[in-house]
Image 1 (cartoon, rainbow, N blue to C red):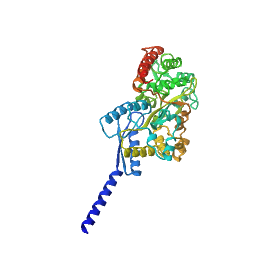
Image 2: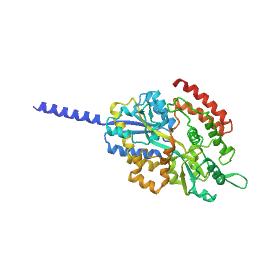
Image 3: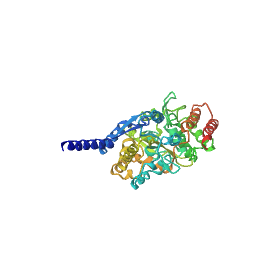
Image 4: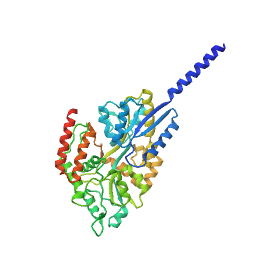
Length: 426
């Protein structure tokens, strides 16, 4: 009898141990950080809160540099057989990740009506880079549009109305001329405007092109329109800000240091990601405003930033845990907290009716500009072999801004190079 009782206790302990092991899921997530603001602490705090609410799941974030660095390192880890289940990567990486057959569509992960409803809860403009052939491969999280930050004190000093930022290209040029200051020797002490052209020049250029009513690529990622006359005209305008109107420095303007230049008063206006909104608010020692980008034929900005992806190599249990984590991170309350902490867009409309974000926007209207601009937004530039194709465009843009090539010549070269790469995908 004693032997039977001992055996029963042993079996019970074994069952409890097996159950505990089944409930403990470890997830590794690669995450980009060189984008804007002190992101790592915010993500670490969110993960800690998630783990309190979900004690059976542990998430380890691997901060891997900028978006390109993160994609490279995540794919290297996958190829090496390391346990990586999910990542936040460029939304524009979707074609390349599909081509490499490493991601699983969320349609295959959701099982309930509630989960399917969640998958359809995001702003449509943010889903354009997420959906291919009717399947959702990425869930919006660290998403943005380009906005125009401007120094209201500088506007007042120049006799401009600080509550009426430029709404068109012509108005921006005229305002920038009044805002550009020179000392007695003719050296510029304050530029009128800066548009960054390192890091993500294609992204800024996509905004110019869209404002001139022309997209840069087809929806299926197999064609580009770099040599369209409206695109050439857009690059001419960007170049002319420095070479003709003399309201912006010549050459390449660095993405990474531009926020600090704006904070130091080196420029009165800058185009940059809304992901810099909260750092600018915290650090600006002057009155500043945020506006939609100016229009030529229309307003426009590409969306930008990163999506959650789940990798195919994850086990069924890990995929389920990853979905649980992503749903938690993109709930209305968390999307609201994330937007307040960083300045990134609250990725779903119901985030803006949470008490936290509703009150925040009421007291700080700049926080709604990127959201309101989604009405005029389009997908970020994305094709098959995106990294190679956008490099052709980046090089063309920089060659023009540095005075080494003419817009039409540079863009025709980029078009020809892109067509050679994309021919295989048609």
